[in-house]
Length: 381
Length: 139
Image 1 (spheres, each protein chain N blue to C red):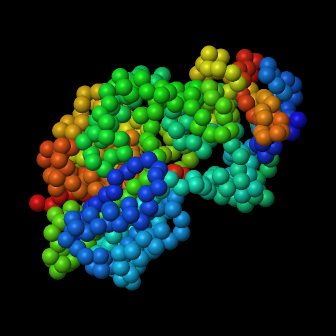
Image 2 (image 1 turned 60 degrees about the horizontal axis):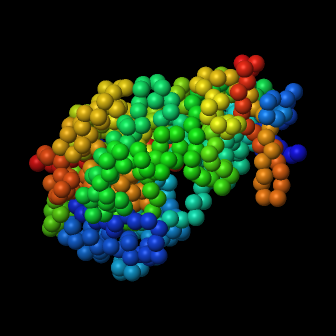
Image 3 (image 1 turned 90 degrees about the vertical axis):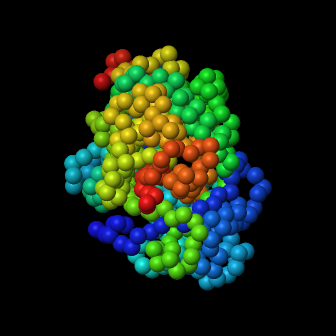
């Protein structure tokens, strides 16, 4: 199998965002073009220099990208819309990287834009019943897993709240975050109960927004005189879930497999990571994935979080953007918003969220179904 | 009263505390010999065998509770919080999310459960929904 590192080097040269926000009457074209123009300005590119675009989108409808690009100039670029549930933006980014790596294009765009749509899901058209009326609600599965882990390894509600407090506090320093209010562990515990020990700020909000990332080849870096500091994409891996074995959820098992694969492809280990943006749709996920990704020993995720190791300027900054819990999770843009954060962290331009000396970062998302996807990015010196 | 989900269950023998007992409709694959739940029209999800290789296989509705929690917020129009949802092993190695009768004080991890039919309102109709209740005499 050919992987990214076997092909031409790929660099992120421009990133931009439109703030994530609750559902509003803001036109999606306004959000998408805001992110796109910011990414173009960051890279020092004009739109006609973009040769292809992959648009991550779940809730707007057919041809969202093509309609949007009509308003910035019909350049004839190749446009592909990409739907992979919560990982739509991540998949759009992967496809843009592969397009450049394979030599098909020199400059490609991954853009995620979304509105809170009609929530039509294929699982509701599967024609297969489930015993519980909540079986298609991810929150319920993760809340039940948290209950199991509470008894299995002594997880406390405070551990979940600690993750949420960290990420909301990170989000309070992020101008693109949906939630920009620092919250304490006590604030999180006292918030509206949702299920079991889960309170509202331990669960991602839904909303809308946009994020864009422009990737290019080494030749384009040289020939186009790009101004944005390039960040190398070392690897990008995607797999889908296998049947659950024992008590480990399939989505957690596939996250482990994808992390191991993306480390191998990138030629790194977990110890090389300075920044991790991971899928914290629910606080329990961060506690699981820090173990799954090898950031700390198995079974010690909650102790590791309690120690402050996952904070900005700790051992590894986990979700310095605020993650899905605070930056938000508008689906189409989410994975590209993670790349936006990592690129700024590796460039040293993350402002009050800057993690000292960051050189290597990983973005990870889960898409309903489940699929898991991860990319490793590195600042080349 | 009609079953709300006749593709998943059928009336069983006897009565539980909260309603008539139900059996569950699983599939038994002739190709791989494995049981899966629920049986569907698409074939075997374990090995991919065609639907004609899968036979209906009744599970007795007995289950073992693995974890449970109370839902406090209306996450779906089909539920009325507070309600209790759990994960239960309905056959060896087959773990399903299940809706439990009553409040969480009735339950403990590892407890034996059984499937029973409980009347629920769906629009202007009353249907018999699948719920699980404590079953000290099961499993």
